[in-house]
Every structure is written in C-alpha cells, then in structure tokens.
Length: 191
Image (cartoon, rainbow, N blue to C red):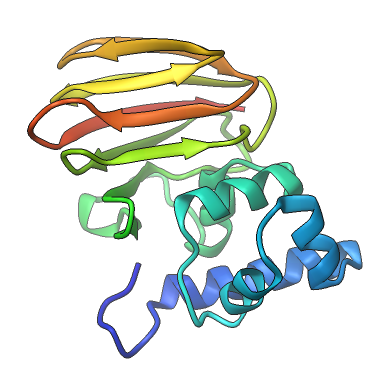
C-alpha cells in the first residue's frame, strides 16, 4: 500500500525484499521467474526493487509459483503475529488500480491453520485470478455488506449480505462487485 506518491510504504519495501529472497532461494533468474509466473520481467524487477506495489493478480501468480497463499506471503513481511491483533495493527494492503483493499484481520501463524482476511471491493471492481496460490485451497467467503459475484470452477455465485460461499479453489476465480455500492466481505482461508 502506498502512503503517498513519493515514498514506498514500509510493507512494500519488506515485500520487495521477500520476493527477491524467494527467487534467490530457488536460484531463478528474473527471466526464469517471468516464464514460470507469466509476469513480465520488468514488472518483477520493479516489484523486487519496491519501485511499484504489485497488483493482486501479480501477487497471486507469484504465490502460485512459490506455493503459498497471498496472506502467508504478506504475513511473512508484516512482522511477528500476536495473539491479539487490534484493528489499528491489522495490516492493510491496497490495489488501487483494481479497487481492492485487503485487511489481514487474523494474520497467518505457523501454529495455526486458518486465517481471516477482510476484503473490500469498490463498486464495479472486478478481479480475476488465473490460478489459486495453492491448489485445493479451502476458503469460506462471508459477505458483510453489499453484493458480490464469485466465479469458481466455472460456476458463478451471486452473494448478498449475509451469504456465505464455501469452496476449494482448484482453478481460475473471479470476484466482481455486483452492486451499485462497494462490497465488504470476510474470507476465511484454511491451507
């Protein structure tokens, strides 16, 4: 998330370092990672230098290559998780171009299996992921406010306030804010 147009956010700086570290651990060049992730070499290079904050779609592709959920990757750069996470301490990440805000309500922890993420999509926002970060990932999506269309396994689901969609994610997914107002939802992720 960018705080202003001039200075990178501290989370973006730590994320950039972690992305470079993950690539180095595998001994991959930027070209190899670009081929594996279908993300351009220049985008990868800029993300690893914290010149840009990766979009949700780019992070999803990188998570798939590295075999981790987006929450786990972001949890690795957001500091040590605490048993009590106050709202003011819950890390936010934003993809402004997509109209998506992600709050890590209950960040991942090595001793725990599940995590909670609050998602907000602006009216008309439409995010497509070409693959899950981890095949077969269990997710429970509960809409708190608004309407959301989720497509998974080539099946479209329309969710209104209070509805919950339970799924295992094996292929592409799409999240679209279906109403005239934004949508707010909770995503429980169980690796």
